[in-house]
View 1 (spheres, rainbow, N blue to C red):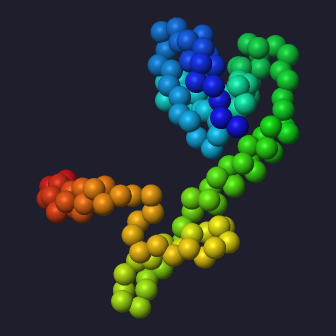
View 2: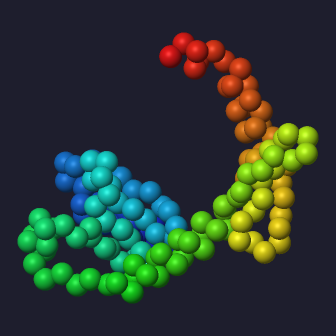
Length: 134
């Protein structure tokens, strides 16, 4: 249930009036931030404003959609389970990643969803003395 980027851009343009507005796509929806705080969600190309007392006074009549919250919770959980891993040490003392909720029992010996170059850069950065200098 992804949002159309044109709709997200339209909403951001309407809000942006001397404020710092940003957004982040997550769990099939889009979170809107105003000065670094979440103020609204866009789900299925519908805008859901965070219910606060000041917001309710400003908007007037508020229509709430509890079924949308329930739907988002279920899709978020499904999305989380498809990318969740349980870490274990194998017999040689090395980390293994066991995928949770896929029903296949998939076990990985390298960090999931990373390629060779990303793992290489991470190990290289670990050699730098940055942490000791902090």
